[in-house]
Length: 393
Image (cartoon, rainbow, N blue to C red; front, side, top):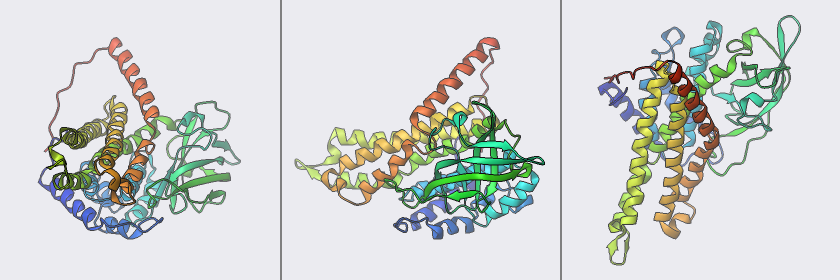
């Protein structure tokens, strides 16, 4: 368990916190912030999680986590951080399930800064993956044909590679498969960008697949057995959404403390009022809760613990609840000034994305209940002694 950042990881965290702080201005209106993305690429963010055989420094998700936490703790707009988390999912997918040919094809492009996308939700079934209507049918000479559509896809329209969740034709709720292709593949079409409440610098949109021809080299893992692999891939993003959900509040909390000491009502600073103190201390409690829950989930995920998927959903809920509740409280703290167009109201718009990014609260609670029941049944069959906690340096 990562109980503290060692000297090397503390330095990584500080380096990326400086990048976030120096890039704290407004992103380009309504566009992906390519300049800032390129700066992260040049700083070596992706080298931390790409093996040396493919141009990286070696897979170290704890180093990457320190960098992500540093970036989130100073940057003022979540869009870029959410893009980083989405890209991390593609790296993990290739790390765990990619063939050597797929790793050669895609990892060096990720190191060069090309964007990826992951297409999970259908317009008609949302995050109920097993009910997807995107189908993979057999074609001639050991080929496949993909038909269907996905929506709410981060980087749709600007990504050069996409991981698509589909299922084998003729299956009801089984047969989930994963497909990884370039976005210039014939039969793949991107729709117009979405118009969202916030996070305009994180473009999302729709992809459609019309008789898109595929072969076995386009499959990520074995066809029909992709559901477990998908859960393992997206679990990393879930815990990271929880982690950054808390740390994105750090600059806003610092400003709120200054404001609460400066702003006076009834002859005293509003910080002297207990209800204001509660709002501010709740934000700090939420940041720390999100942080430690995410650390624990990452430790379990990397170690293959059976409860890892549950812990990653718990981390996501903890961070999402923290950032949304805090954004509302910060607007209330600033009164009518907070409701005006500006940093406080803008943060609230951006923070609301955490209600759905990485899956809704309802979906995660369903996942948690399912995991609870499975672990309960397993414990009844063969009780296992608790394992001692190991402390990492």
